[in-house]
Image (tube, rainbow, N blue to C red; front, side, top):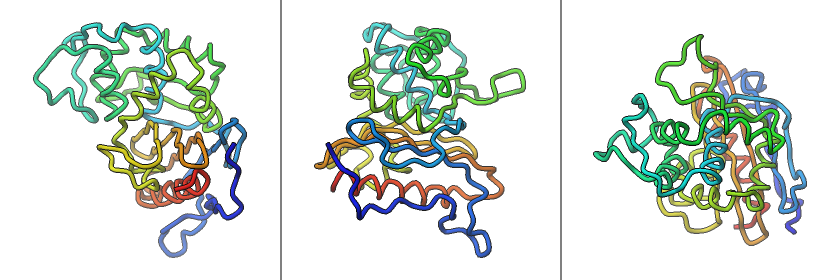
Length: 270
């Protein structure tokens, strides 16, 4: 079992990195962080119980429900749902029909919104919620389909979660029904802009530490959860950040997420 190395430096999340002069105290960004070792014990945490917006991280629950209940060769037609833009590749492809397994890869690799909504049509948002409950998750949920415009009539956020629950979910995935398949899908993730930026991997062809991660991005939201395995063993992590966009920059948040990734890299080994 990997041990917490004494020379690992965990960044102080009460101090803003790269902040403008006079704005060094981080009252702007709300963090929820939890890092666990191979046995599930907490190596490092900062307000892990906080429930924050997690944007696309909630799609993890959808992927697990798909792995459990949807035939991966099931033909799925994007014309069965309303078009949705933003992240994804399917909107740019010519084919209207893809198998469910391919859609799961699109969700895991580029957080494809259209593929997400088509899979939700087959997996069922209510069944995704029931799955979360069966796993004992009380803070972590996928609340809605992806929408180009979210109004007062819709749930206020796509998903929410706490670092405590999400890091434990990632730790448990290898032993959950459908979990190994989800981890294989997550191995295609191309978003290494956050915590995973510290691992110096090629986003399109990982070689080095073994990384399985899912990210979430929205205005004032950055979230990165995953499992990374190096010579010293695996670590599961969840790093969530929410902030009012007018009082902090994405660059400040990403610098801190990279620093947390550097610390995790120190635990798993290079």
